[in-house]
Amino acid sequence: MSLHAELHRHLGGAVVPRVFWRYLHRSCHPLAEAYPEYEGFEAFITRPRASLEEYLELHSLVEVVQRPDTLAYFVSKLVRGAFVFESVVYMELRHTPFLRTDPTEPMARRIDAMRPIVDTIAAAGDQPEYPLVFSQILCMHSRLPFEVNRAIVDLAASMPRAVCGIDLAGPDHLYAERLEEFISLFRHAQELGLKTTGHLYETPQGCYAELLPYLDRIGHGIQIPLLYPELLPAIAERRQCLEICPTTYLKTGTLASLEPLRSVFDRCERAGVDIVLCTDNAGLHNVRLPFEFENLLTLDIIDFRQLQACQDAAFRHAFAWPYRQPARHLLRERAGTGGG
Ligand SMILES: [Zn+2]
Image (cartoon, rainbow, N blue to C red; front, side):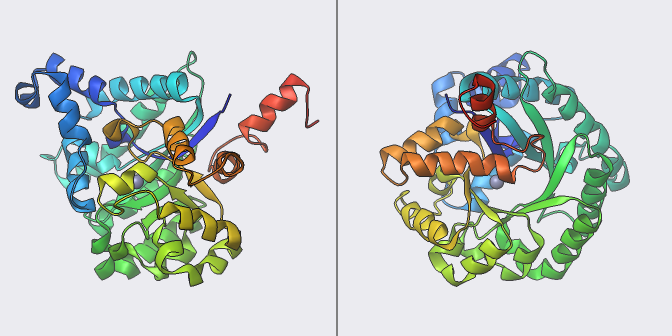
């Protein structure tokens, strides 16, 4: 039995299409009319998009439905599903809390409304019958103003029991004009003791070496081994890992096939850079974490040794896993057959 740690999953993309579709129908949402049958809705949600930007529009669709009164419903369902169907025993769920607040309210009110959002998600993630270790990563967003992103960092630091780190998300070509700003925000986060990750080197337009030194982990980062392998020694030196989410690259059109990931794994292994496999948007893709592994095995992109290395690395690079050992080793110790 494999036990997984999921380090990169977005709240907006984590709800499986059937739960989402049922919710739309039950709440008589306008989208329900457009998709009276589930099959049509699933096809719409999971079809590949032409670009990262178009793909991210799908998140906007989900975000407007995920509001304070519905969040507990969605989070409790996705935690249950991850524990029961994916053997996920550790999950960092990431989201931009500002995007779950009421857009008709003034900015200051929306900033104040972020804390209860994080509280609601923490409470919904804590389910004794599905006891995975659950934490949140709060995402700064490339479309949000500095003031809001700064408030997101401060909020993350003030809620250490619920939040384990911060991220930078949103269209990555927008980072270019604001690099100094994002560097200052990551610096601020580190001064507050926060762990950091960021969507970087996912697409050829999202490669900003200036941001790399401020990250504990790199969200995606596949363009580093593919286009800038000379950066790998420094990545290894800083003990950063790449959070690789294979299905995403097909859905965003970043890769035409998963074949290039073979070089990604080979080059990282040779350089001593850890890779962790994640889903990004397990719901919207309708691809769960065990299948991301199985898929790469079937395609002969990784072997079982690499599979276990990725699984163990996920626990080592987790921001809030409470044990020194990955889950696999803890199980073995408990069975009395190893470790000690
Ligand atoms: Zn992501």
